[in-house]
Amino acid sequence: MFERFKSVFGLYPKSVGGWWVDSYSLGYMQKKYGVTASLIVADQYTTDNYQIWGQYWGAPYYPSKISTLRPAQTLDEKIPVVVMQWAARDPINGYGKYVENSTYSVQVNDYQDFHLLTEGYFARLIDIYTKQDLNQFGQVVVGLENSYSWEKYGGGYGKQIKVLDDKRKSGQLSLVTMEEFASWYRNKFTTISPEHLIVANDPLGGEGKSVWFMNPFYRVGWFLNKEGSVIRDVRQYIEGDSEPCFKTACDKLNFATFSTRVLDEVTYGKSVLLDEGKIEDLKVTREEEKYVLGYSNKAGQKKTVEFLPRDISIDGKVSSVDTFILQAVSSPGSLRESRGGMGVSSGSPKEQQFPDILLQLIKFILFIPLVLFIPGFLLVRSLNMRSLPSNFFLSVISGMVMLTLVAYLGGLLKIPWLTFIYLAAFVGIFILKKYYLELNLKGVKITLDKINLLVILTLITGAIFQSLSLLRSGWVYDFGIGFWGPLGHDGIWHQALINQLIKQVPPQNPVLSGEILSNYHYFFDLLVAETVRLSQIPVMDLLYRFYPLTFSVLLGLGTYLLVMKITGSRIATIISLYFVYFQ
Image (cartoon, rainbow, N blue to C red; front, side, top):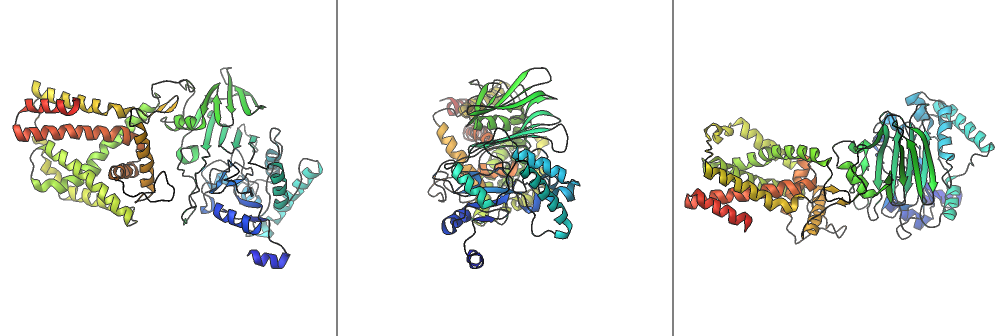
């Protein structure tokens, strides 16, 4: 294609474009053909079966060598090509999950067909992108896709050109090619991309407003909508984080899922509600290296949101971007105004996490009988054990082993749905064959005399104390995520390994990108990964709370059953439990 272009025009093209241009191809074209400008589609969640999500909002940037979606943070990782965006979106109405959102754009067929809007709407979008006083420049790409009918859209496109020409004559903007803009940008910004700010009033005439702040380290989307003052989008750009299709080819583009945690109302339904209701006196200013968003809430209180080079400040309380995101996504819903001292160090976990943990605990309690006990019981029922505790103990342990092996086999064979077939088969047999009648739950009698109460109390107390060193890890505190005890670093390794196992089996080495992990025992991590996949319970709740507590209870129950089998003495079981848990 490049050679054909040169044979016709006498030179290689400086500008390339596509719905998506991956970083490997972009770097190759830059080195081999001298490409300086690239066009990709602006953020869209579902349109055209292309999901591009998370780049600068409507602004150009230098991409990373391993991710076109992410701006380069250093000269070493920078591709010296200016990435621009096709069909720049409405900064307020264009943020959303559906085609109705992404078609609020500068493209004539979008706003004309889907929303019956005219060139007046287009003119207001152009003003938003080219009249930002706090930026060093404004830029937007305008055009018409060549697959659309000229007869239908040529008139509307002509009106767009008239709007642009009028604004050019007034001195508001210049009309240049992508190559010309890229040349200016590369001469102006010789290192990495500058920060960029978009402040917008609703171009549809509503009362909504938005402020988008982007720099090479993070982006933030603040909105004033019917809820009030809301931060709907925060994502941190992590050096070394590659695009989803960089190492292996993809059948489709799905860039709304991230290996790093993000605050994303569209993808995950999470947002940060700063103030409910209307606000007044909204001002956005720049003070040295920070951008300050200030307003008065409906109670007359002065509020500030500050975007610093690598941090976010709410009413003077500074948090790293990562901490801000963690606190927001760990809350059960939108993080409300009562923020509980966001920038103050504390040894206590955030109170908002406890309702969510209770919900996850309920899910795990249901997970044990459905996914672990039933398959395990079908395996051990031939032992004809009459004791319900013995049945429960062996069945749950067997179920853990079976689930892990099925997950391993499914991963090796590239059959991710094998676990679902396995569970459907075992649960179906359990119900259809009425094996649940063998459990004889009605015949279970528990005598709560003093000795039995002491056994139960020792087991419960021992399990809690044995798990206590782990229970506090993985919670979000004011200083970030806490990891406690001498094995805190080990837990972080297992988190990383579990995240790799969720993606594939065998896993990549979390500390050596692209290399398969070998000579390491990861079946427990695989059990947790498969539990996450089936239940959507967060990794940290399973790794630090639910599974350790389950193992500790099973240890106590197994000790009780073994000692009773050998000695028949309940006093002996109490002594054994004491030594197991407390010595």
